[in-house]
Image (cartoon, rainbow, N blue to C red):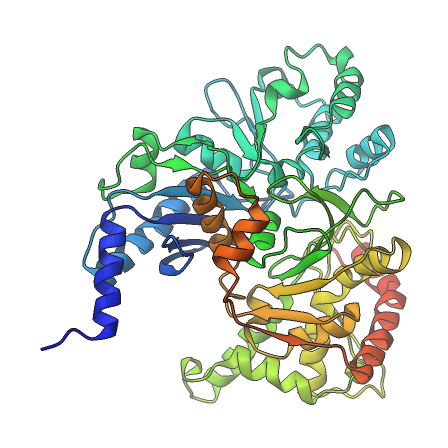
Length: 540
């Protein structure tokens, strides 16, 4: 009997996995830890997943250190089992591994590698004083969620454990250290720790000196560079999997030590890679629990804007970020309520793709959402200068309260804070954008969020066939690029090796939706006073 084409492919993939001709990306997202195993052409061979949720502990948004270890182990186990079931082979080695995670926040460790405090995620906005003082000191925007803001807030709060500080880092850098023993991070992630000099591809030395001078009277035994991770750029090696790291990652004990690691990266950098948006005048919008737009600029901005982060691509080019802490959480909450409604009717919600049904229903809504207004603020929102969140729905007595308008308002709102930042880049800074790509779960329903984003930024938006692969796939590509060890630029590698034949759909803005979104955003800005009042008065 002849071997079919699919069986040939499966046999080829089995051999690829057995020989370790693969790359693995693992990304710690806000609600899922995901793993993607790819071949040397970037094709996905297998995936793994682990659900988790942050906790509010003593006023701090966090994940426990046990949850972090258990989460990556379960994610890898899910991937390993998928490979065994699909290909009949056990993973023993991998060509290269890379770890990514939601950016910012802080994990402080002592010389023994023990945590000195809870992991503070990007969601925390308890750093206003530190961020304001550092922004003035550097004449450079320091957002509340940046690692340096968290570190300096510790100092302002006179935390006693700072005398024992040895390493202050982010989640992806922390996990890379646990797996390799190396205190390093990728430059894109580093640019959310402390300002970067794109010429030297390292922390900005003048600002480092200014910070060390600022805290000199505290008497700490360390200076800033002593405790921050070393900065690496895409293509460099970040270390190798240790024996202890292999035990942590693979509970089956089959994975061998010695696997090289790519520099860890933040989810912004992996999003850029996953959308081929690392060259100047390209950009992407990632829509998930948080939503952010990244635009690779041709140089620094003309002015300081507290709404805009200046970060870098994984190879160190300057990049402007409009970051919204709140994205799809409220859409997910409404989805879950409708799922409960279906169950109440005696039906099985698993028989229906409710998320797609609800998103498509929004297309029948009015261009301005019929006067409905939604704030899916589960946490503070830096773009609108609110340090806490209250999910809120507002409408006028004569607003058109329909399912279509409600869902349209939900999706509009998930993009609204990002639009405010993009308005600054496009209108005030006159940033030139040749191409915007959307990715993340919100773009999984074709032609919906893509249409609304195109209207919001009045720019054509492309969604690739890999739109929902997202960050872990982007991290796997960075691991593949490091393994390739060539002198080619990251842009050349992505353009020619990965995306040359990639299919995608582009939607241009239409006048009706542009006008409708404009009216919605006017309502959104006017209603911020209501959101602010809710924060002040609703505290049960």
